[in-house]
Image 1: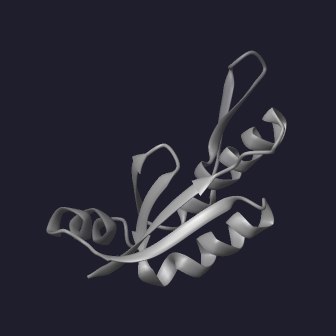
Image 2: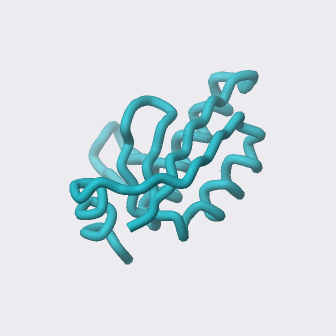
Length: 99
């Protein structure tokens, strides 16, 4: 199976913009009434199977490359994408999360 490695940096954004970027990408848990209620707010990666290698580096399926690319352009993130051959372990992880 072919995949893509996405390497990104979000320099030049304020802390508030960086937090918004991360929330839209990964999703977050929203708590209200002093933690009495919790709501999960999904992010883009809830729709796309991925593997986070280290901070700023994601491994995704090749066909999901355009979704991620469009999101990164929205925030003017510095992004580098390369097509890669997935290992059997990576293939299993990305296939098990398939929508």
